[in-house]
Image (spheres, rainbow over the protein chains, first blue to last red):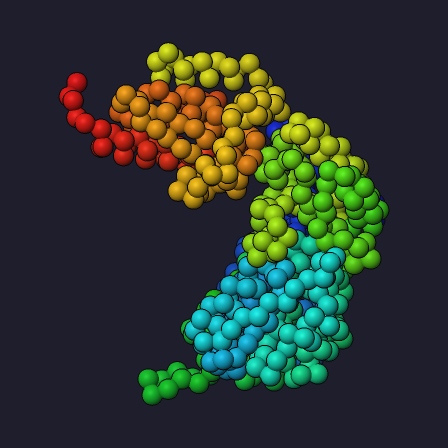
Length: 399
Length: 144
């Protein structure tokens, strides 16, 4: 499909900001949604808005079918063994908090250790810190290599007999490099340690097969993969989910309730307390269908990578084209990231600036913040060229 | 110049620029012209929270009037705060406290800067107000 035809599927792209055509390069924060997603959500709200699972009427049955079909679809997409391994959440953050709480309750005690990497998003750090504080456990930090990737050698050295879980990202939202998650999982399993993969960026750019990767948990958000916001997925290996207590109590997640004691439903229902995001979850299907059929133009990745690395004023963090996704975080000598982002904004270009929810990584890199441009299949090479041209103009204004 | 005259001057200066990039060019010039703080001046208590960039603001009360100095690691922010301190330096705490800071909205900065930036701007204004309020309380009440 021609890029122009792809763009026509995304209504939000066809607009001007400050009189300039919008060039949306903040896809790693939130991707735009295709018409198929926007329309499905609206159609469900109009025609099948009813609470799922409980009632016997037609609308409830339609809504339940749409919701549960999505679970089966996501199971197939991730190649999970069973539907009971697919839990719907409000996003990757909720998925990560769920595991940190419920796995932590079941398996983590005083003196135990949790390993995260220095390149994690705050969502994959803070829930673990909260857990460690609660339990008297400690958090150990896996460093990145000189390019910005995680290595299984470094991980192996960090694992001890007190290590209870390793939580790392498939792709850092700052560095944009695909980590060797299969090798990392293999190392952990050698020591019998479960692994959680934060796939918020990974799910968008890599074909994910949870059995092939060998991870115990895989978490992602819908809104970064073109689905409605407020949707998310947690894949968890059945044996672990079965052994974990619920994260939240409420409707739907129980088997029976009485004041002498309540019993819980099986997974995934056990982890889906309360009314779910019933009009939005089914949008995962058209969103993932789009993602499977389209990839970002590889010429964009090569072009932007070359332009940023050959410019002496610019330091790109996360190097090595071999593992690079079209996500570029960089610093410009003598120009503040916020100034650059403000000027680019007035040229119609949406980029991210700041710490990108990864303060520990910023400290590790020795910067106060970075500028990030992240591309999607609907971005064109012309937009990438315009971005580089405007970046140069902005630098000239500032330096 | 009175506070009112200074504000009118800023509004007039800004009205010359129709394009956003020209407004930014002007702010960048102002930012570059503002004398930077020494590292020793950049203390934690002078740091203004709420900005994506860092801003340091220092004040001094002399002969009943407040004088501000400021710095930032981002140049557009520095330009904006340069405007603010030019306008409000040399006025009494009472004058500053009574001001509504509405001229910022009039030159379009508050509405058109990013929400993060606008929050930073709001923080700067709140800090200037707070300083004026505290200086007003501390100053001997001579009556009018």
